[in-house]
Length: 578
Image: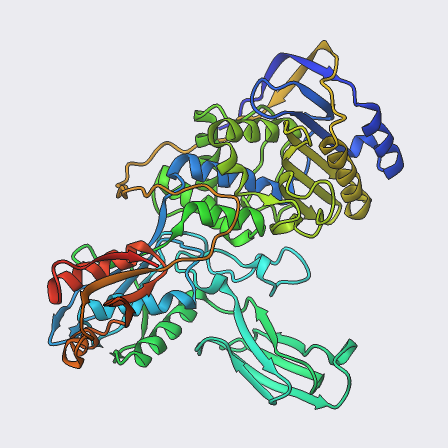
């Protein structure tokens, strides 16, 4: 079926550029045709301060992440938690699970080795001491193929090239630790899905230049991928970590989980199997990620490509049903933003949603419309998900010690011949502006960044004024994107947890289950009851003795343990945050 091309006669406003910006463009040596600028007072209806080529399509690089992160918040809310579900088709008798342990991944991109303690704690709390069966993993929620790397550039094994998977683990990155002083090389996590060959030669030289880092070669031509360490390295060097994308995340998860279970006294007799979860499987528990607010923040601040890919796929599954595909994800983002009136006009090609693409396209005007909508809807809470100038993320160093520090909340985007920045700027008087500056030029890398910096500094210093404008007519051709018809699917609604917005990072507190309070020190017999449940605990004395089970990073974890504690130990137990 042929796609229709719709021509619309629009009335648009054409603005001049302030003289100060014109002068900075002249100094940069970048042709005006390669620059798009849209700066206006923040929020819909705000007056325009600077405009240049606002409707010209550009390669967005990572600023495209603004669309998928904002669409995710609109659809799912700040308090959404990504689930990983654990099932069985067997029976539990005297601590032995007679049957397979089934695990379904829903694409949580944050699941990593640090989560295994709590996952195993869940299993022990359910009374599981042995699995008489296999570990079966279901990764069918995403339909994304089996590529490890996107192969976008000459660094296929770098973390930013990692491809998505419904059963993600450690962001698909395998880490090898090198300790030259101790002549030691080891894997950070137990993982038999890849091998390490140590051909390093230690030398008694200063730790600099060619002696400061191990040479690394990856061989994927064998059945088991191999990391080969080679060359000379100084004995005087400290710890070095080699991080590469080279194996399957579900395999890494299997080996790490099995090892952690073994450490905690839970034996598994079977092996790894890949299979979809049968309908008659009984759910044992659900392990949840941190809030979507934290995940979106890391996606934007650190410009995490893998997180952005997963957000796109999650939205595809949520809107059009599983299995998620990239095309469903693209259509879902457009549908969500359009339905809320957040999407402006012009060509939009999302591609993979992370910006690691030469196909992705948008214009400054469209991006400004999204940013204004997000500002009006969520204000500072949304702004804080972006990198804060001089404070964190991709512009921590870029604006440190300048007048811009703590006055800009931005998303950056960089590819070869692309240097983009978009977000919000607050001037010294407290007035806020929506700012989009896209530079697609052979001079973009250094000169584009400097031009953007100077414009943002000028804005902070308070020299900006609304521009006079003249009305003209423009014919715009737009190609509507094909949108899937909605697929009926069941969504399990979760109770949302209210979270306070903050700009400063406070000292982290953990959740405990307080079993009881005692005037006298608890007896060993009482404490052994807790040990038999396989739960970590501590006794704290402040006037009285408190018995605390934990700590747990997530409240959801503590609440699950609380149910067991009330059943087995004390009906009056409660959650305590310390």
